[in-house]
Image: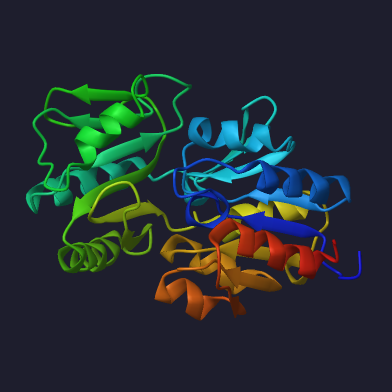
Length: 282
């Protein structure tokens, strides 16, 4: 390679996946080629593990991946958990109470094995954006709609997510972060699957960059040797921390501000072309 970079940390949705949520054959081939050249290739995504694995395995990747926006690090081949950054149990209970008090529907995302109780919400919860109905179809077999009141079960909760008006969600994030006194962080971003916005709450230490740093440490890779690419508000820490960072075409304003370079052009193809340049691949 002509560049000093030893690791690529890449987002999936809005970055390397197509608009229909698939990984194009040419993008998969590029990831395989980069990994074969000796670069550590690591996904850093907001997706659940079982939602991310098919794309990563299609690309022939091995080793760790960062999922749940940094809440979980897992091995691609086996699916085994390598590290967790869970929400504290008292914070989960307080989040449910706060969200329901303001008329929001909390969704609990856990590290449960593949199947029911990966995503849990209460029957009859408000669904103004249609997200719950969509998710029940999209993640069929992975959801558990329980009789109210909603309570965390035995599973480790990694994220609490809700949907609604962006202004109200931003205020909700500020309120929760103040109440939780540093135990929880939140962010708001536009939803890709349905019209509307989501607020997401994780443990304060959980973000994509912290997960990528965990992976990099295992390979003795320094932050300045990492290239990162993402497109949205959940990528800000990742883009800010990496030695070189790219905002994918049509990224959020926050992602563009955090990145070293904002890309333009045809989505994943523009991303792959820029990464080939950075890693010295033809």
